[in-house]
Image (cartoon, rainbow, N blue to C red; front, side, top):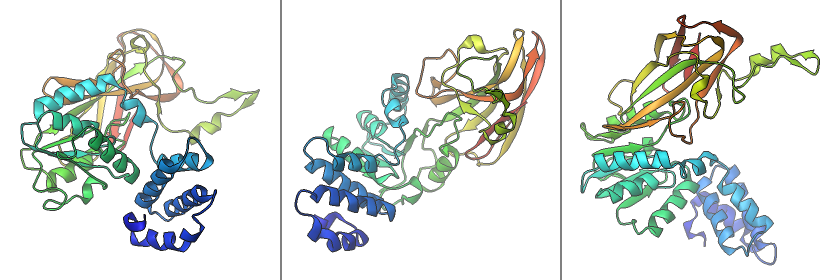
Length: 356
């Protein structure tokens, strides 16, 4: 069994292998997997955890510990995006419109491998799909095999920055696909990731899916889903506690009726890696469309996956697994129709800030 272990893990395994007998065998094996995880031997920990699950008979403490290890770094949103039909249908259309028969496609952050399989179905000759989480990469490899696409999809357990042309990539890729969107758009480092891929892994004219995105803002009135600053609690003034809170909150899907102003585009961003990655500032005037008490700024994005294929998280758009972001004011701001309010924004390669 130890043939698939790295040298460091094999030392641990061989030291403990005499104890892997009897009714406590699986508990001891998962204990070793936990030790490997603690030492940063993530790929081996994932392999050993999968072996424990394969040998378990139904549910047990060992199987629960193994599942916890395998999912330790896997956010719950992986499951919601795989059931997000709006997202999947938009990506399917964009990939079909972009991938040419026989092309070499790079899939950055493949996750389950779903976009890589869409690219193969669209006619790609080879898809090299990288995934930096070893446990996810192992599962994606099994999924690709289950769907009989192992001859056209190569899962590589590393970040895209570790790929090399002439190594994992036989040549520079002719198409790049990714889904590195966060609720703020930038939180998963889509800009620097695509810039590095463009410099080192893609042909000069390789199209990208997605290719552009815009960030929009509007003033909003209070809704239950919006975070409220802490004030009087049980008769005590806790106002000072607000300084410890995050500057914005992901608030789910706000209703269009919550908007008190027209929406405005704050930033337009190139997602192909062709433009330099740098900090940027912008300001927009929001025209108040109806009177009310504005409690903050709502922010959302629209991604242009390919020509005519838009994926939007705007209020009123078809619901997706992303929500909007809400930046609350310290105090509500009374506004009247026709008034203008200036909203400012800043973004770095992976952060976004909005304020009035």
